[in-house]
Image (cartoon, rainbow, N blue to C red; front, side):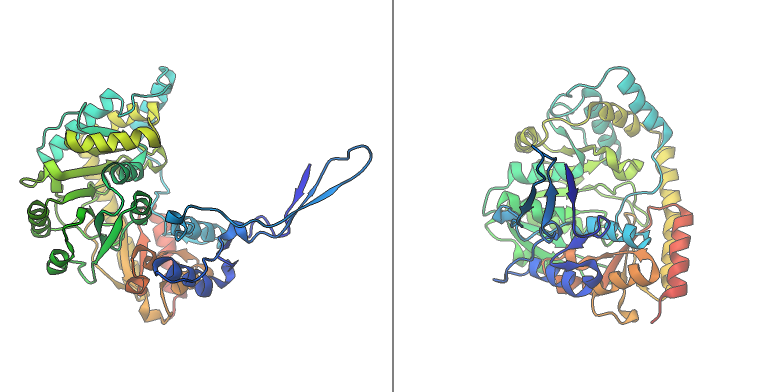
Length: 456
C-alpha cells in the first residue's frame, strides 16, 4: 500500500498556519492558551494535514482510491488549552533552519564513562526485568546517602524514597497523588511548563506569583495575600528554570513560616541543585519544621548529562510518600532497571566529580554571558541552572516569539520565548532564555553568529 501526503514531510506545521508565519500565529496561540477567552482553539499541526490519498493494492484487477476526510483532534477538556510544547517546536525549527540550538536544555555532550559502563554491566548481568515499583534497593540507598550528605537529613530509603521515570514523573505523581480537584496550588512564574499541565490533570486551581527582573526576588507580601484556606501546596523550583535564580535562605525561611502557619505543603523541584554557582543550594525540607510537609524532587539527568535515561525520585515523609506511590503505581509502576543500577553508581561519585562539573559549567556560562552582552542583550544574573535570561527589546521586535523567530531564521540561533512560562504571557514578552549546556565550540559559534548578524 502506498501513502502520499500533499505537503512535504520536512515541513512541520503548528497552529493553523505554517511556521513561516510563526510570529503572528504562534504568539496568538500562546496568548489564547493562557487566557480565559471563548475563542475557538486553533488545531495543532497534525490537524492541518491535507486529505491523504491512499492507493490500495490491486484487488481483482481493480485499483481503488480511498479519500480520508479530515477529523478534528480529540483531547480531554483539562488538556485542551495546552499545545505542542515550546521545546519540541523550537528544536524542530532548529533542524529546519540549520540553527544552533541554545533553546532546549539538553547537553550536546555525553555523560561520564563510569556511569555508562555501569549501565552496560547491569544489562550484561541480566538486570533487565521489572524493577520493584518504588525503586531498586541499591538506588534508594544511594539517594538516601546523597540526601544526607547534601542536607544532613536522614531518610528511610524503603519508606521515604520513590524512584520515578525522571523528575517530570515525580512531579506528576506528587500532584496526582496529593492534590484534590479544587485545591489551590501556588506557582512562582515563570515556571517549567509541565507544572501547570500536571496540575490541570489533577483538577487543581493554579495561582501564580510572578518573579520579576532584575533579581526575580519573591514578593513576600503578595505571597501572604495569595495564600488562602483553600491553599493545599506551594510548588517551587530552586535553582530556578528559566531564570537561573536561587531562592535565598531568607526567602525560604519566609516561605517555610507561611507554610507552617497555614498548614500548606511544599513541593520542591531541585534538579539543578548541583549547578549552583553564586551561593550554596538549600533544600527547603532541611529547614526547621519543614521535612514533614515537603516533597523533594530530583533527578539524575541534569547532573550527569544523561537526560534520556529519565531517572528521577521523590523524597517525602511516609504519610506523603503514600500518595506519591499510589499515583506512581498507576503511571509507570517501575522505571528502567539497568539504568537504576547505573544511577546508584553515579550518585556515589566522589565529590571531585561535582567540583569539576561546576567548574566546567562556569566556563561555559562565561562564554555565553560575555557573548550575549557583546551582542547587545541586557543579561540578567543567573546564580544556578544552565540557563540565562536576557531582555531582547534592544533589537526592536514586538515580543519574545517574534524575536525568537527572527533569531532562528536570520541569525541561525535558537532561544526559548519565556512568555509560555507565565500564566499571563504579557509578563514574559520581553524575555528569552538561552542555555549553556553545550560544548564550548558550539557556544562560541552561536555567540559569533549573534555578534555578527544581530542588529539593534
